[in-house]
Image (tube, rainbow, N blue to C red; front, side):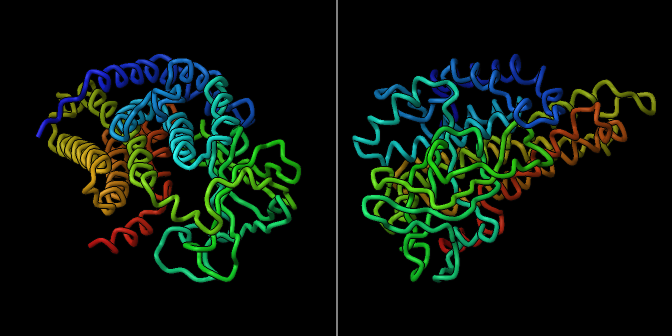
Length: 391
């Protein structure tokens, strides 16, 4: 066993850490307090990261990307998340979706969209799956015609007419290209009745609805996507008709939930580090509170849960790049690390005592952020159901 990172991974880790330290940490808490979502969204910060190569990291070098594998994306995502989880999630959504498109695009689609993606530092992507009435049904094994995606796509000559609503969509309202999950056959379950399309914001019949306000991840944007007789050319279909789930379950599926969970390691680690420094300088009972067992035990537990989470995610990522991948590793790594992150941030806040509950302390932000991953990238209950199939 060798846990040594490659030179390239160390370079990217440092690049991402310096970006988080210099461009995120000093500014994100004030930026979060801006009430107008359009003014709050950190286009300037994201552009800086894009110019460093972070936005295009997940696609091969030979087509203009960074060529990062799943483990490298985990390492970089954690460092960005250490600076701000919302910014990390914005990048991670783009990483996952452009990687998926690179797998499923035909040559004409690649020629149409890839150059614009590479050249435009504001070109982010989103996937429209979750709906007001449909969430975990899209992932868990039970299926029937009445379960799963309800947004419909009906064939009309060389086009498709799409109707429906998506909500809570990460990068909704800021993306320049959306991958849309639609029901093309309402008589069968999602495994055979779902097709993936690309849609762009300028298409007639496609509009952005409500911008969702969240407890945490304030610098990522989630929004409703509304489709009212939106006409989409068949050229924008990226999977076989009825083949959406099969395409999603291919090589792409191995790393997406793992790299998502890695971003949440960032704020968990930041919470632990800030609590550790506070405990070394806060004096009670004539000595730093880190020397009191009640505090020291909490910090020791934070340390071991962070280390266990990181090793589990990195191992799952390593396995995902090999032929003997076990899918339950990814599903349960996401569930375990997100719950561990919540426990770490909660204990870290306790170390700060009453001060930690005040908004001028950093702990409330970490706690608000890590809570999101108890359901982000699929609820942990759904992850366990998915893992059960492989036990």
